[in-house]
Image (cartoon, rainbow, N blue to C red; front, side, top):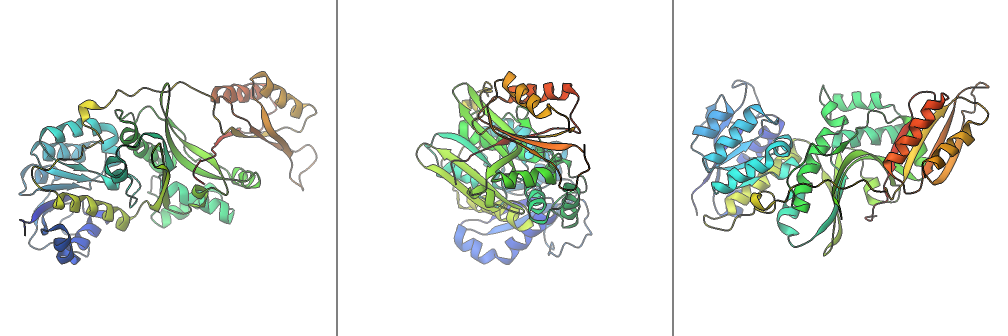
Length: 440
């Protein structure tokens, strides 16, 4: 049997502790599967005295991740610290510069420095594995980097944030407000005390940027993503979508066009009978569309200690099974120097159309005026419905729901802006893209 693979783990939170537990409990079967033992040689965390329910006796302790990465006698550095900068960035750079293999679950780090880190890894003959950084337990990174090599991808999209999916699912199924569902998500540990990173779409954007690079061979462009979170989604939107035959999901979508690459994260209406519409709770789903395979939808746990630890473990065992001198899989699907510059696609008509909700003063001519403003901007309407509450007082505001045919985002924004200038809007208008996935 080959020499043991010595690993150092920085970060002993939920994921790190779960990883240590799995490695210790399944040591023998992992050794048989990998052809060598996997040995935890060193760890690093903030509090040496905290009871994590794991046995750390005989394992070297480092107070700082950078010290572990730069000096520990290890073969693999596992970064579970988190954050795009600080200790995570410095320690990963140090480990790769030493020629150590690195496993990370840090999507923020990769979205910002992924290309740079890939260059360092490739220069020093090190592997950089990051399955856990995108969609938790779903093996989408391995699929894009290895299993689907040779496919030309046209679109990747999916539900990539369990917190947002949990909130939207609860709102629909139980008729609860956004704030009520967010509080429950925080109580259950699905959302942080400061949930803005999740609910404003940043987490999904980082994951999408990484998948875009793997799918299309371009440099990472996390700052070039249209970004919109779910904080403005109301129970009225949820109900209206359902009545129209749709369900609202926060999707990350990247697609290749003749003019470049389009990346966007935003609430989206998907048909009730589509598979992705059935993905509820903290579950994630990633869809890949390619020329050879066609359409593939992968669904599974996207968050939580066990799901993330499983993905990290898979990356470690891949390294354990690799042999010196063997051809390495490029970090980002192709060698870093062969990644193409990112080229943003020109704006084009959105085929799925738009859902627009307007609350307006109950005046004569408002309905006709809205239709006119849409026509002025070249927007064809699939439907327009006026709704009022059954028990509403005479003259109370009414809601108007519009569904457009394929049109430009700019045209929709201009039309809504013109309607706002008329002075009869009550509250803020709502605009949501409609997607009609090929994968149903």
